[in-house]
Image 1: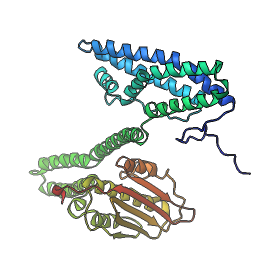
Image 2: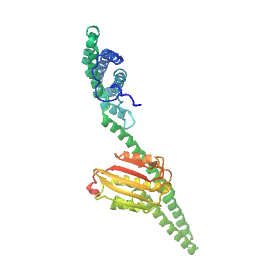
Image 3: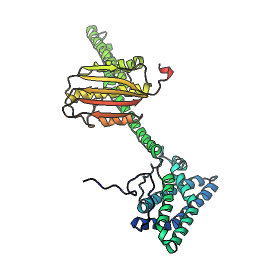
Image 4: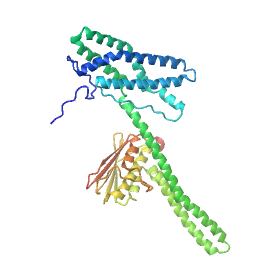
Length: 402
């Protein structure tokens, strides 16, 4: 049984509903909306006018700008109420705009964020310019109720279509731009959290690894110094042990530095770096690179550590016998594909972490890629194979990096 087509009020489409000549429930809702325009418009006009004159006039004082910021916050509330009225009476589908982003704590940051809030200013403009239109629609609707009854449905539909256009133009989100701003604000939080986690990992690795080993080395050399005169042979053995500890500490520091940013990635690029990385995987990995030039250093770093975590997942979870990493460029995008012939069934809950302490999982990788306008696509049916594709913006490499 096929579903009945959606009504023009519920379809969410941008087109305006067509005229109609019957008195249905929607016609009465539209009439109620038009009659309510005048009181609502009058309240909005008086509020915005008072805010602009009082807040603007007092802007030279310490209370002016905070007051204006509060008034703009009220404009957002007015817009929210108008969107609710449009949804209820005009049957419009309209999203709420993204909230005000306050970058830092504190009164000054809050005030400045609200003063430059484009959504609130659009709502203020909506309230300010509507009053003449609201008076007109109120008078025409009232006259039609008593004089022009046969044409009232057409009149109501025509007038409310103008209202729909005003609501979409001034009260709806700025579509992709505002949504993208909200996404980038969320992604920035992800980047900050990831950077903080990486710093904690580096601190932990230094404290538990190289630092502890160097402390033990210093103590051993101190004991060797004390025994140097009374027992030279024992002192020589202790110095020999200390020499071994120095080598181990240096290796740990090299491994840690490689985890921060491998030298081969800086010197030779993504293809050779991934070849060196795959050599340390417990599963044989073939690397195929079709890159003739290098993307930005930051993009190379993200791609490298994405593949690193994916190869760790293959080692720990896949049961694969072979794997392959493919690199290529498509227009202005860098694509990295990692596939294996394992058991499949991979989900976003799989974890990987360079420090072995549990990791971010594939969902975390997707968030990291999203922070730079990238994405992660997973295809892993039960029984395999598993194919994971990472897509990143290419971004021109600065001349200093070449």
